[in-house]
Amino acid sequence: MNNNNVVLSSLSMDLKRIAIGFHRGSDAMAKRFIVEAYKRKEEVNTSAVAPYIKDLLEKMIISFKNEDKQKIAEDSLMYSTLFQNYCLKH
Image (cartoon, one colour):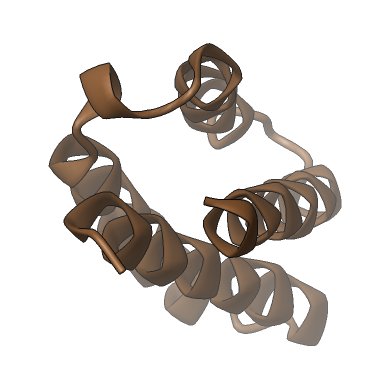
């Protein structure tokens, strides 16, 4: 497993925690993991991943700016699954 897979797998877990936090009403926890997701995104070596992963990383950041917490939770869960699947394939 290379470093990008480790970072993307960790990002996937952070995104799941965001989704769970907002779903449970634990906004403080979810916001903390949003900060962690920002950090993980910066750790990804974008030159070594597929182009669609680069796009997903940018769209993920944009989705965090949404006012609707349930939409952030849904998007986070979707991105989590996509990143996890990428790690399993590569």
